[in-house]
Length: 273
Image 1: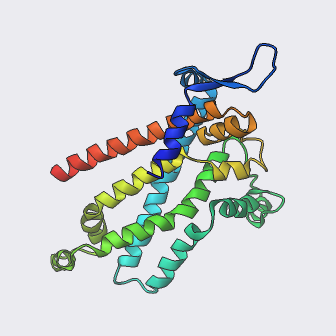
Image 2 (image 1 turned 90 degrees about the vertical axis):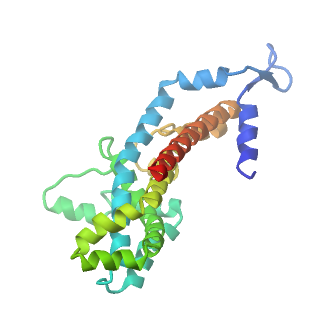
């Protein structure tokens, strides 16, 4: 219900437009325009450019983040690992840092004049620009990987600990080493949580906002309407066009809903097979 109220309000507002009288006197009135706001959005190249960016971002960020999270979770779950508590805490700490703060920390490391890392690399004769148009998408993905890997580590660790010990012991008796145990036994048994985190990460990538908004203050490679969420924010607050912003928000919600339905179908088919 908490989520349906703002979505419903946005849905209602998206079919109206503000209109003033021909001579500009009096307060603007709401005029029903049907799907005109949606047509305006989906025919805008800026919207689809933003969609392509967030999907490209997802193709970079999601696989790397899930692999890193799975590797850490398997290490924590391994009996041979020492200091599990340290690994668990250190992997979760970045997630506890607010997204804006994390973006500011990484922004410091991305600015050549401030970053000791970039200055060190440049001293070796390598000229790198982590905020340029060709690389800024990777820089944003890196922030999200660092921030969200720990969240998935917690999910994977809980799933790994739910695997019956008898299954692990039987595999060890059959001669399975650590690698075979991790790849052939443990990972397939937690396909459900892996698929769930992949879905949540995909939906999260569509809602990309904090990181590019922060980095936009230090690079010209990111515009005010760089992602769909930034486009909705700019339309609502900068252009004072709440109706257009509502239409964009509803379209983003529809895309997220379609992804959730696809996940449900695939997970149901997988459980039946």
